[in-house]
Image 1 (cartoon, one colour):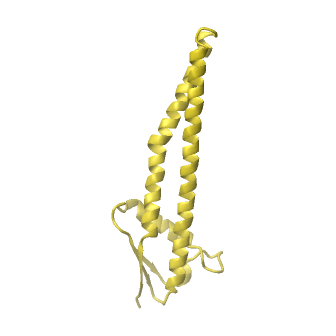
Image 2 (image 1 turned 90 degrees about the horizontal axis):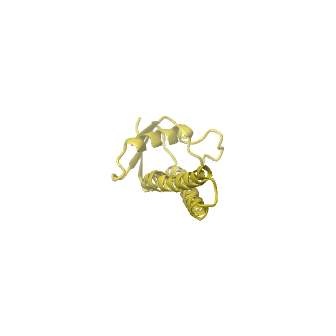
Length: 156
């Protein structure tokens, strides 16, 4: 992935006077390139500039960005896991209620309770089968990006 800039300040968010936060344009560009890249291939990032860049500062900011992304993804995984367990638990409770109350309540109410239980279990399974995989894929992409080799080049 080649990133051409004319000034080092283009790499950083204009509101961050310490230039520790990557610019939204740069993040958007990197994410778009990552969407089409293979998850298996190692990513190389080449910063091409007309002026010298503080390489250590950029690498530190880039690692900070990657670490923050991993924190967000880990939170998403934790929330998703909690949702899965909660929905499964609710589903089991409703199914047990429908079994216990089989001969004691109206058939329509019994079907509603059973349906709620089945739906809750389905939502748990859906979250586990689909959403967990997507979050895991995003985590793999973030780890791949974090392990990218960053090169700098000055071109006149």
